[in-house]
Length: 398
Ligand code: AMP
Image (tube, rainbow, N blue to C red; front, side):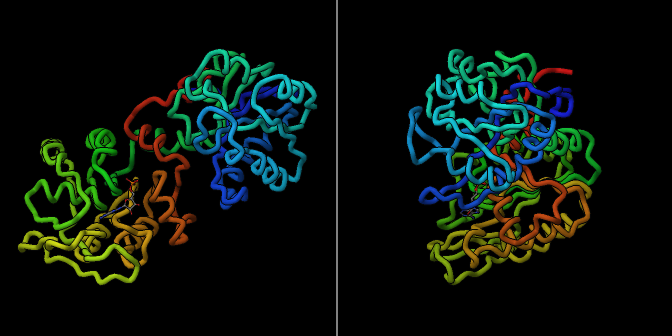
């Protein structure tokens, strides 16, 4: 996918519209984590240094297609100003006469943030009239919001039809470099670690990775579904009983392709889903182990940890998406924590997919030890599935 990059744009005195991901967590109107705003700074600084008249747009949260003060981007504009050490003006609607006037008044090297695009139903509907209004008089568009690039919305796809050129920002460029280019011919062994709640959420990514990976390590509640399908008693564990056929099908496809699938050989279980609860590890399943009635599997067991970690240590390329257990509670975190450490220590090219594995990496302060941490959960899974992201596909080809 050869697409125009922000580096290729001539922006001096040009009105440039940039889609950023300022979907930050808020509590009582205060931003509790500004990582996403900070992540957009390289692209913003680059355009301002080039003399662009820069207009930023983003969504925040899930308003219902109409203004809702709880989801205002105003605090994000204030924080951006602090991080940038530069005035950031704000338009209280992303389209309409007020926004148009503020855009027209922008000078070279000045920046304006528009209010939440999802205050209009036309954003998610990718309505042409909305996209035309959002594009306004901008002649260039930059998309730097990877987290929403898998959605064809007005501000990610629609606007590209109403400007002269559309380019990717530095953030999207880096996501594509790691999730597409580097994984096109990975150094082997290529090991993929999948976890989290549901097999059904990750079925497409598993199928796609069976074509590429040497080994798939499966943990989390997802693994319970596979173990249940193989006939093991899983007590009260979270699992998808109706996905047994699918799980067995994946196992036989993997065997046919010579891809090894490692399931936990044992499981840590508890009777009470709370911090400090008593836990114990099943005997290995091969020796008659089971999750007893009244207990539920909440993490991989100690032998599973050992086996997973030695596989990880031998890998040259690792993709990790999804925790091994309920790592949010310290009592159930051991599997996720040790797997995270093993990935960090592997010396391999390490790519952490979005969502909960990123939260885990942050919890254990291992961010600096990973080669790349993706900023988008759904979008990174779709790239791994080999899908084209609408927000990237719509950018200008080179
Ligand atoms: P996902 O969004 O599918 O990546 O799932 C992440 C969630 O799965 C996390 O909140 C974990 O707490 C949860 N999870 C992982 N393993 C288990 C398990 N064995 N039982 C219940 N929940 C789990």
